[in-house]
Image (cartoon, rainbow, N blue to C red; front, side, top):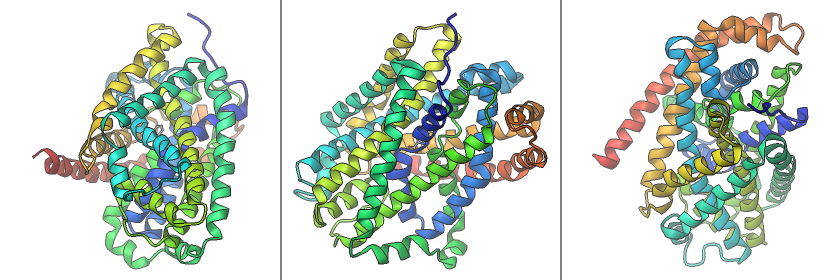
Length: 447
Ligand code: PHE
């Protein structure tokens, strides 16, 4: 077998992980979750979960990936016994499902970039425009274009494909978003928007915590690309000398900062534009925000820049999901990288076609795929990882995290005990809540 690939530089690994983390989760999903679950109240839960659940679970994935130097399925086969050796499959299934719909939504983002360039936001109504975008053959076509871009990058491998592309994409995303946030801050509705976004209402937290918590947990996993082996895969291309915890702090910090900045872009624009149509849920940035763009100075260009930024962010995330499934075929079945990427890319494209073609106004297939993958599989994946390192392979985790740190000291124990009790209990509650929620919405759709 050929020598396994690796990152060329430390920055390459960090940028790739940041590129994976920063994506539709930050710019498409995060603002509508904030809107749906009580503004700043959601933000509070989200930040706590990022720090106390997301970060420890990311360290689990890093430790497993670097220890084994394998894809998630192979990694668990190597270090787990009995059922533990099989849990990598949960990650692979999640990856398949997530990439299939992620690419569809990214395709809509591409369409909205073009619509902005033509200066046509909300021509004929923002809602009608969204409806025309999200179903039928155009949506299938933009899904295909996006998957083709993912295939093209991943086919070049770790250094010449993923690492090179994220070195261009991640700085571009950062610069564009900060620029947009600065411009949004000059708009007349900015003051009101900041107040809504930044001052949590204790009443909302107390009365709605049982809904906010599971939603915030699902968002935390999604945005950090956790629970499906992306970070296992990326860490498997790392050298032994690196301080995983330090890299993790940078990655989590940048992802959070970027989600937060996306809010600083979206809310002032919304509060400035006098909206006639507002849409919650997955249509939020497409309907509400694009209508807002049509009502503010330079809106068309601004919208095109905004959606182009989101498209780049989506691409740098999608390649990480593709790498998870591709690395499995390369490591375990010795398949040539280009063949693996082409075959899996085609399969994932086909899996996404129902979501892309769906013309129902409630986006039934998107809700089904997103509910299954994000609210169930990612949380389940995170729970299994926490159980495994927390209770089964504790020493392996501690040893691996210690490398490159010199002396983990009390932090190692703090990490393990955080995983052992609070993280596990919380994820159990969240999984239960999400499972009943998803079940009810499935009954609502199909029953
Ligand atoms: N983190 C990505 C985002 O925020 C989505 C993602 C989820 C990527 C799971 C990989 C794995 O858009």
